[in-house]
Image 1: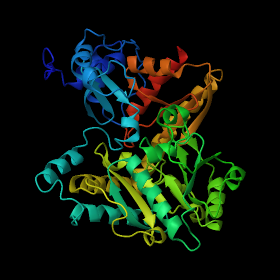
Image 2: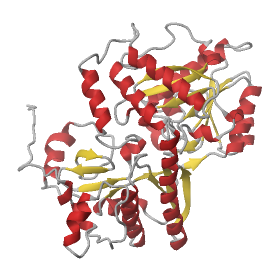
Image 3: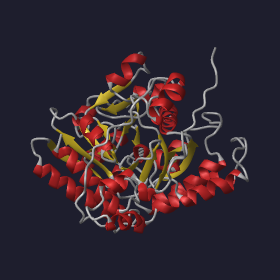
Length: 475
């Protein structure tokens, strides 16, 4: 017989960051400096002159609080999806996150490029409390104030900050894969409605090493056998081109059959691979010649992650898309996504063509509006680029010091990657970093991916990179 299982930690969890494991790891040999270190840990000017001490404490064992929780409460009742270590996260603040064992970590993952303004952001917490006492949900049968304001703000700020020059309308949803599914539907409708369009103009072109989501349509655009094979057959009519190779696109594109091309201006999951700007200009021209919709998936690389509001904001207008999809950072952890389109795409749509139950709910929209206010700001974006320089300067030094291990530094802004030689087991580096108080993640092409909060303090960058260096050196 199934029974409801609850789990209580034996003894209160310590909330004080001053007693955290990470501070002990970085403590000076002089005990008088430990308190000072704790008080300055959240400051952007925290000292980097102390020699760090690396203890390499393994993940919690099966008989720990974490192990007991996983095996009695979580794992037996959770659908198999991810391979996870014995790590149960409980709370966070800024660029720090804590586990059930009261260990503290510097977070270079931000929930895979999601918590752009840091964990437990105080203003967002206030918004959640305030809006939850007003209106959480009302359906899309009616207008609501936050949804309209967010749509207006996304279009306006995009135009102001060198983004999609013809941005006009926004569809609000709940996730990145939903945003891409909407883009696919909009593109297919456009393909059937344009002059000369027909029931045959329904095919898509995607690119090697791309990732667009796990729902059936978005998965069909993600040409990775590991993800696709178990769920084949997928949606037909998807062709795969090579990024930065315009000839490969020319061989596939058809005025009669192709409705859209979708590409990430910076591939995230596929290996942190920036797409060449000149290639994107040529791609835009090729789409225009064939009346094909150009979709930029900026779910990971957008909303300030590249050092500009959008990754395509680095490009001339001649490379701008017809559709931009977004999610991740838009809610700072609250589920929200969006699909932004031009008026040309809007003109192909009609009432009833698409919809959503939760998309555009007042709570998510109000959070998204606050996030856009913070990120769509030249001063904020300038600081993102300053932090990026701190990262890249150190990462380039590591690449020069360990040429037998590191092939190259990749990325832009705070979407950065270290691509390692195939003989290096990057999962071991991830594990060693975690044991020393740093969370990082991997990407394709044997790449370590670094996607911290966009407002991460400089002191946390320095400390985290010291851990990364230590773990690379000893890998």
